[in-house]
Amino acid sequence: EKAGHRHFMAKEIAEQPVVLADAISRYSTAEGALNLPEGLDFTGIDRVMLVACGTASYACHVAKYWFEQVAGLAAEIDIASEFRYRDPVLSERAMTIFVSQSGETADTLAALRYAKGKVAKVVSVVNVPTSSIARESDLSLPIHAGVEVGVASTKAFTCQLGVLALMALKAGADRGRLEAAALAAHLEDLRRLPGLLNVSLALSEPVTALADELARARDIIFLGRGAMYPLALEGALKLKEISYIHAEGYASGELKHGPIALIDDQVPVIVMAPRDALFEKTVSNMQEVMARSGKVLLLSDAQGIEEASPGVWQSLALPEVPPVWAPILYAVPAQLLAYHTAVAKGTDVDQPRNLAKSVTVE
Ligand code: M6R
Image (cartoon, rainbow, N blue to C red; front, side):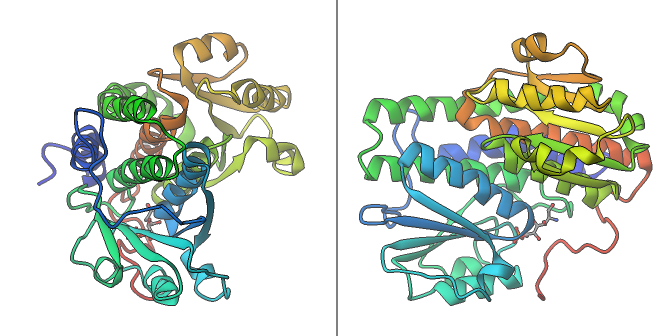
C-alpha cells in the first residue's frame, strides 16, 4: 500500500506530479481554456474571502496573492477558528472559499455555516467530495489528490494550489483582466508544472545529505517574500509537525523587526528565493543573516544560486519556473526537508505525536 516507500508521506510526496497533472487537466483543456464548474462566476464579485486551517490555510494565503495579482480582485484570508468567532463583515458581493483536505475540519465547517446565506456564494475546495464541507457548500470543487494518509499534508496542498490557481485565472477572465492569449499562456505554464515537480523530486538525495545536520538544530527559520512567504510558513509547519524541531516562517522583510535577534551560527535559515521581482530584496535579507553567522540554506534556480550563493552554507537548485506559480514548485523541497529531517531524527513520520489527520472537534 505504500508502493515501495518507507512511509505514506514519502509515497504522497512522490505522487504529486501525477495527481497535480490530473487536477489541472480536469479543470482546463489542452487547447488553453478553463473547464471549471459553471456556477463559479466572479462577475459582480468584489472580494473573495479564503478560510481554512493549517496547511490548507497556507494554500489560501498563496491564493490571496494570485487573486490580487492575476485577477485584480481583493482577497482576504483567515484561519477558520478566528473567522467563525470574529464577526467578520460579509456582503452579497463577496465570495467565500473554504479549503479543506478532509472536508470535515470542525472550525472550517463552522466558518462555512456562518457565511452561508450571507455572501454571493459559498465555495469549497476539498479532497473528499462526499464530506460535510463539500455537501454544505453552494459549489464544491474536488482537488482529485487521491486518499492522503500521512498526517502531514503534502499532495493535497499542491493540488489545492493547482485548483486555486485555476480559480484565480477564472476570476481574471471574468473580470476582463486576462485576455484569451494571456490565459492560454498561464494555462500552458501550469500544465508544465507537474514535469518540474518531477525534476524537484530528485532533490530527495541532496536533502537526505543535509538531514543529519538539520536534525541536530534546535530552531530553524524559513524566509520568503511575496507568495513565497506562505511557503515559508508551510515549510516551518511541516518541519515542526513531524520532526518536533521548533521552526518559524517569516516574511523576509520582517526579519529586522525581531527574528534576526535569534540568529547565530547554530540556527539554520532556509531561504526560499525563486528569481522573481523580489529576488534581490530576499538576497539582501539573506546577507543580513550571514553577517550574523547564520547558516543559510538557499533554495533557488541554478542562476539564482550562482548569483547569490557566496557565503551560504548550502543550496538546493530547483528548475526555473514562471515566478507566479513558483509556490507550487517550492512546496516539494519544503516537504522533503521536513520528511528527511524527521527520518534522520527517527520520529513517527506518518503518525506524529499529538496530531490527528482530521480535526473534527475544535
Ligand atoms: O482536512 P483539512 O485540510 O481541513 O485540515 C486542516 C489542517 O488540520 C491540516 O492541514 C494540518 O495542518 C496538517 N496536519 C498539515 O500538515
